[in-house]
Length: 402
Image (cartoon, rainbow, N blue to C red; front, side, top):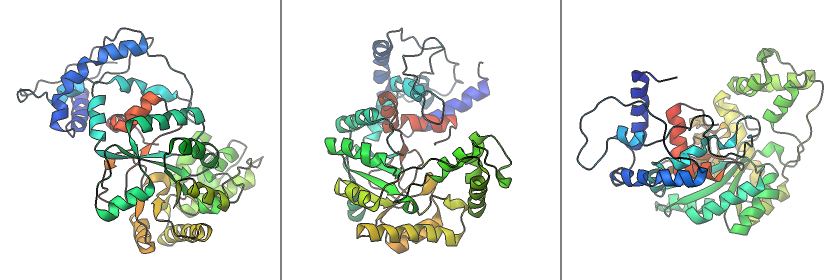
């Protein structure tokens, strides 16, 4: 359906605000970057590179000589090809979404991708994984990092912050949240083969157990007859969103009601052990704090926030023989009360999951941005995440991060 003029104007203005953050030299190079894209797209797809027509933006004042306006720069961003003209896909669905993982591949051929890549060279990219379900694809992503980026360790980021010295250009840190066993069985060998360091943030109360993550458990129980008064018996697909929106005591009570009322118990999930944490650390994967039970800190009272952080801190210190210095906020959002506790415990680094690049010298070491990525992500989309184009496009479209 064609867009109205007001909608088109608003969309162009929002994308223009993203392009306007690029260095002026990169914006001037846009025509040259755009000139090489049709041939590249034709080689990749085997089809004509003709772009679909776009609604013309409103007339504006003439640009400065030799420099296109932000709206002109945005007009070079192609829209997804019409049905029947899409590039070849693997059609592999990301677990739990039912959507093809390659849905953002077309951005790889956007004329502004070289501009975003150039800007990203002067930024810090921290990649946030949740386990490794596709070892082959994960290995391909690591190979891309070796060719296109400068992998750095958690210790290198800490040193840069302590010395107030920016990290090298194209710095990338690989991290894992929740740290299921695939970090040990799949990620560690792939990282070691390529000499890439990483960090894993663990949920302390699951270490040495066979308990599933609470969100996996809740989904299973709801699909097998589990009911809870506060959940209003909605569709299971809405369960996690509703549980996360509850005050933490209500979330815990609802989980218990699901356990009591469900027809079946969830399958066991073998978790990492204290010995596994030491093996990871010796293999170049630093261990960090991800709270005791992974609650949504914004839904917890002050006492629970403190207990979740300090409890995990004490357990990790006992298992590793040294206190952790890095923390990843559960559910990805910053909490000022948590930051206060982290400062008291001597933490040096804290990581968000806001799907953004950050400065090579973090301005707020306890609020470092990260990019959401999955081991099943295609290499084309992986490139646009690494450059910052895909995150910027999703923000423009108002799409959720997770």
